[in-house]
Length: 294
Image (cartoon, rainbow, N blue to C red; front, side, top):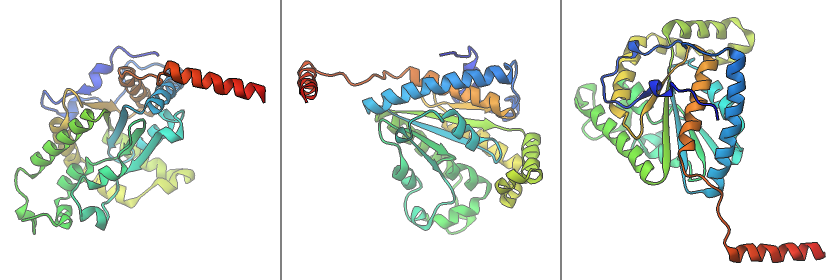
């Protein structure tokens, strides 16, 4: 498998304060698009091989999280780089506005309902991180959760999100203990490129279905989202479960980086097909002989 020697530059473990303006949204020293597409094709085949062993072994699981602002390319990213994976071995979920049933439970309840089993690759297109992102930009959402002691905005404790960050770190550590590899990607898009992509959704008829006025309304909160994302990433990144901050203005280059990182991390798991005992091999040989005599 081809690997970039510079992947570590995208890895953030939370040890230093995070200022997203210091992280480029632009691809630098990138190969040509033809070279990128060739490498991604190879990476897709390698990932299919890893996933086949993961599924057969059923000892480890993988959770891949994509977080980003609107138009950063999450959907096309998932569709393309995971296109070679056996559908039986992958499950994709999108975390939208919580339902009444979701709100009647703890904020991680809906995560448990869709968490991948061991042997699967689970993909969260947006994730439980929405519960510390959108809720900081629009704290009034928390009033719908019927949390003890929170009846109005002034009731929200100053350490509320600090506590949720701790819950998320502990949840991911718990997943690690259960045999799960957690990979978290933040697709870092510039405001100018987001505007360009929104414009294309309006200008191109076959893209009109993607356009949502709600996206434009949320775009008005760009500075706040940048601040909140920096805070969330800083307080939920660890050595074991870091965030990968991916420059997303160039979709093909971002796909290349993500596919490289996923394969690099899966390569470190002790994946293998289950071994067959001598007794079982003898049983299989007997079955084979029976088949040959029919």
